[in-house]
Image 1 (cartoon, rainbow over the protein chains, first blue to last red):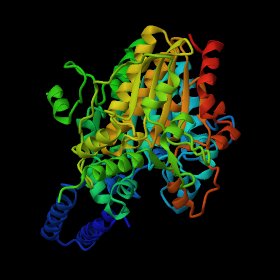
Image 2: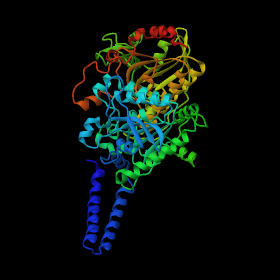
Image 3: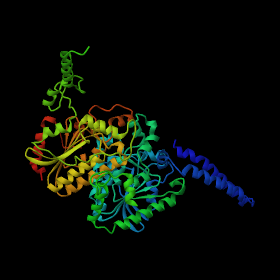
Image 4: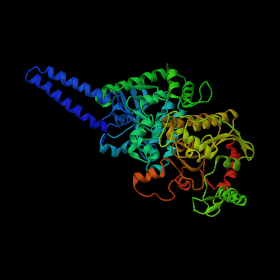
Length: 332
Length: 276
């Protein structure tokens, strides 16, 4: 069970009572405003207590919240969308929703990883774990976008690439490696947004873009906290500790100089106000694209090269690590 | 009473003898180390391939000199990582055990008269995992080889991205990919040699972005670890699953080569014009 969902229960009960009282005061025409105000204050207090300061493990659970908006919902809010299917080799991977779209009247190629909203959808989309044919579809569309001069928008949300037998048989490594390679080759602007979980190479395969944006409660990690705990502590129940050690919150990733912007969420998480969240994300993407479209293809490739080249390395003093404090210093 | 000289000499000799023997993880037999070395680090009794140290691999391949690049790039502790032990302690102990400063050695040399940029990963240092230093050294190799207009060869041996460097390790997939792409865009060629094991972030980046992909006999190659898959599906995997021969059969690699023939194979590939 998701601990965030558990903690929300008390709030939902309060919410129900407030609505009930409001309904009563209108229908019975009685003044209940003092009770309502008291309950609303109580509600705000609890909300701040629960969500004001979340631990890294709670952030992981926020990123995985079953009600969190998925890629399909963001895509539905675009002005126009024409889905494209298949890798031209094996099959169409339903965990990847992709195609031509219009964002604020700009042509874009949108690529989204679709996490299931319920068991039925999760079975259909393999819990958002993309298979080789999915990465090959993405690779194909990156190439197409680059050739047509259409900017790329990726919505990242996956625990990781599919680890099944069939994926290994169809060379999952090669599929991810060539997806990354296709992004390196692109000469069009690209922006990715981590909307939920940014799990390992399976996320980076579509996330190695000119700009990386992260929703406040999204995470980016080299390995899932459970897997990391199993490997490092030989105990998967130590996932909360591993989550803290991995430095996977959006603020961490921003401090490392990897995320270019953190998009804030409503108190209590993206699902508390889906429309506002989605609108903020699309506006941020649009803003970054507006900057990037002024670059020449050569500038785009050069800037992308140095963005990733400097992660943890080369700076003006010669070869050494860019530590979080140094990144902060540079930003100041 | 002090130990008599003859006993001390005998004990030293025994200790030295013991150091000359190693146990084969293939057949469990004791193998005499000089025999092993003479046999390309392949068990003379069962044919099991020992995982090679980078230095041994380089001396097996190169005609002569080796000019290292990026050897001065050293690991830090960007996450201040602690699990059972602090990360810097793990690095220090691997350094002492392996004599390496990191999990890859990169530089320039010649193979069969062909000058090449070459990097060799070493599983004995942090399981060959890729952190920022591995990413830097691999990227630097491609950059320098591009300047010199030389082909590149990379021997991979890796458990994947290095957990202790978190998302910074993950981003090395991006760093190395961009370096390979820029190098190849200039018409230069790259041969990837997959050795046991090549998995995770390394297999999902530069190891599978080459013009020619060669694998060493029976090397384990894949994205997900064997144990992860077994736990997920709750059944035993076939013995040859994720082996070099399995990948060859599924069309993922160009060739599987036995270690004693590897150098000659590379020379022939370079001769076909893989050398720019």
